[in-house]
Image (cartoon, rainbow, N blue to C red; front, side):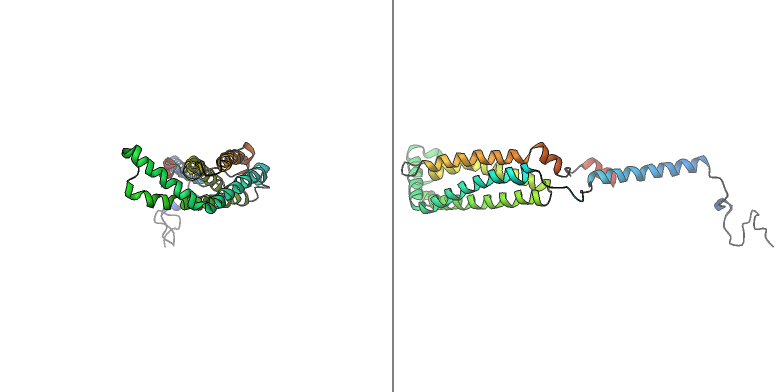
Length: 229
């Protein structure tokens, strides 16, 4: 009969190095420590890439939920006034733009639109730009509301991007839609008032209180992603 404590092992046939009373060597302890460090480092990288969202961020700051929204509503009302005025005077604006393009063909043919495209451009751009005034306002509204409602930094950043695009389009829109002798100069003034209001609304959304309330940015970090693989 075999000795259960002998070199041949016990009745189960387990090797001697799996004895629960055996003291592990220093090399085995070092290997376990290294494995634990690797797991901890991987967990930290994963947490940095995808930080947890707070369960209750609290009430949105007034700068985002009230001040920015009120100023933006002022800009939106002006935008609707501009769009309504433009559609009511669309034929006049189209004729004025057509005459301007034809004058450009005569005075500076190298930098003007081809004469055979003047009619198409004059008929397309005024209604398209008036519709885009409303479309951009709707996009800005949805993003501004979502930033406050869902505690979303991404929505706030997309709102800022939409505002920047809107601001870049205002000078061009003023020149193509309203800067004519038979068009009310009030529309030009209102356009730049809208420009100022949009800038103020955007500045409210980047105040320190808003940045502190919004979750941390989850920008992509390629080096950490590669280390996590």
